[in-house]
Length: 179
Image 1 (cartoon, helix red, strand yellow):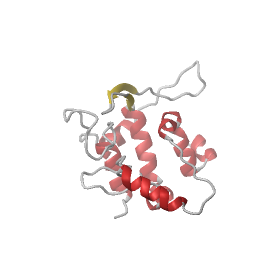
Image 2 (tube, one colour):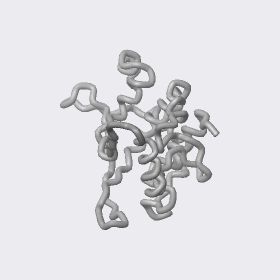
Image 3 (cartoon, one colour):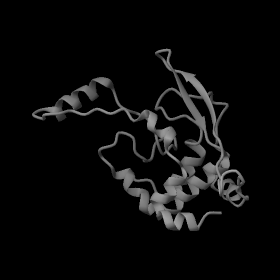
Image 4 (cartoon, one colour):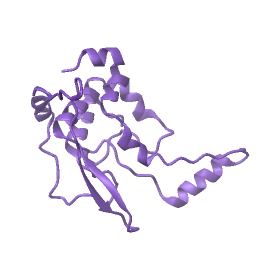
């Protein structure tokens, strides 16, 4: 089922706010949850004055809380919890512009796309079983001259959340409508 804009907002705030993206093993203990981060709370937060910095002209940014979790293979990976005010603004912007962003849920080329999940999440980082991935790669590469494989896992920390508004409504309108 394709997610509607209200489902998207609730899922992003209440189920996908904290790092719990895998299908099975949660990254945080059950004590940490965001079910009370409702659309009403986000709307109240969004009415708050954004802070600015005199050092950076017009800067409205907020830092995230980063921590490290050890994966099954002993390697650490960084997880981040965004500031609730910036998350509220981002989720409300996505909600408001979901009709223009809905195509992302239809992208059959992506293993990770927004959709309804039984636990209420919008995004689950489920890449599939390694044997099935190997078979699919072998099948797709049959008769081809080149096979390109890219790991984009480290690109996400470099995405500026304010650029999502630029993509949704255009740079000029997004910059003129800042609060």
